[in-house]
Length: 488
Image 1 (cartoon, rainbow, N blue to C red):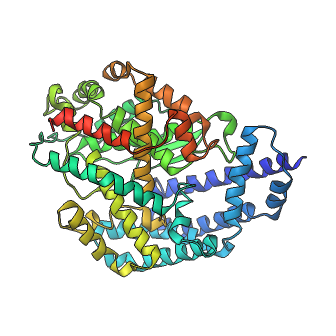
Image 2 (cartoon, rainbow, N blue to C red):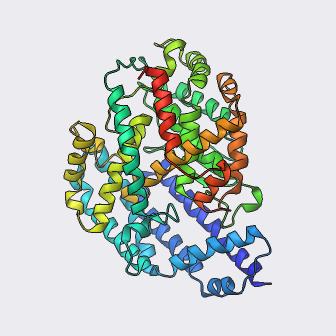
Image 3 (tube, rainbow, N blue to C red):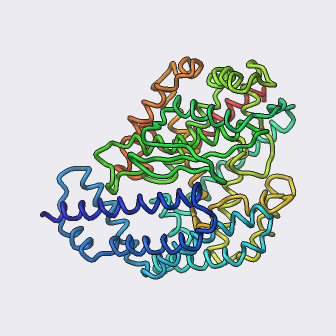
C-alpha cells in the first residue's frame, strides 16, 4: 500500500476507537450506575493509552513524510493528522492516561460538590486537574505560552491576545445595550407546571423541525446538556425543570445545532481526520444560530407559541407578547440560561480567570474568591451560592481549559453567518413564521456543515460568508433585535 493509503487506514481505526471512547463518556453522563465511577475511570485510562499509542506510532510520522495527496481532501487530511501527531508525540503516555483517569472520576466529584454547594469538596480534585493540564501544556508548548497552547485544542489558529482584543471591542457595546435595557419593564416569565414528559415530547418534535435525525441520534437527560458523537451516531442530552419549560426546549435546540453539524458532514469524511466539526468555535456557531437567530426570532416564536400551548394545555402569555417573553433580558448567575445580551459577559469572566490560572497570577485555592469578586463587578450581584458561581459548569472538572472562549467566538461566527444567510435567503422570516426553517438549514448544511474539518476554522466561516470575520454583525444584530422588541 502507498504511504497515504496506510496512513488513512490507520487513522480510520484510530477515529473509530475515539468514537468508542466518546460513547463511554456519553454513558457516564446518562446511563452509568453511580457505583461504576472508579471502574469507568480505569476503562477510560486504558482506552486513552491505546489511542495515545496509535496517535504517536512512529509509522505515522514516516507515512506523513512519504504521503503525497491526490487532491485537496487528502491534503486537508494530512494537515489535520500532522497537527494531531505533532501534539501527541510531545505528551508522555502516562500523563495522557492519568488525565483520562482523573477527569473521568472528577466529573462525579464535581457533580456531588455542585449538588451540595461544597467548593471544598471539589478543590483537591480541581488542583490535580489543573496541575496535570499545566504539565501537559508545558510539554506541548516547549517554552511557549501555556494558555495559548490550551486554546489550540479547541480553536486552532487563535491565541489569547487576539481573543482579549476581540472581547475588548465587544464589551462596550454589550454593556451599553444592557444599560439601555435595564430601565425596561420586562414581561413576566411563563407560569405554571409543565410536565417532564410533555417537555420531552415537545423537544423531540422541535428537534425534528430543526433537522435532527433520530435514525442516527437520540435524546437523553443529563446534569449539563451536551452533544456526543459524529456521523451515524450523534446523541444529545437535555434537562427538565417542571417550572420552566424554555430551558429544556432551548437546551435541546442548542444541542441539535451541534448534532446537525455532525450528522450533516459528508458521509465520505466519516471516520477520517476531517469527519467532525473543525473547531469548537465553528461548532458553537451552529448551536447558537439554531438556538438564537432562528429559534428565538420573532417569526419562529409565533409558530412556537401554538405548539407549546397544544402540548401544555395553554400558556400564561399570549402569542402577541411571546417573542418578548422568550427574549427577556435579566441579569442572572447561570451562563447556560443567560440571554444573548449577557451571555458573552459570562464567557469573558471565565476567559480572564483561566488566563490568570495558567499564567501564574491565580491559584486554584483563590478561584472562588476571584470568581465572586469579578461577578459582582461585572454583573452587580453577589454570588449567593457556589452552584451559581464557580461550580456551575462541568468544564473545569474535565480539564477543558481554553474551551470557554470558543462560546463567544461561536457567537461572533454565528453573527457573520446570520448576516450572510439573510443576504442569500431574503424570505427567511416567512419560513420561520410557518415553522419551516429548512431554507436556513440547507444553507448552513451546504456552506458549513458538510465540509467538516476540510478547511481551518476561520477559512470555514469566510468561505461560507464571503466576508472577513468581525464582531460587528453580531453586535448589530443584537442592537436591532432588542431595539425592535423593547424599544431601546
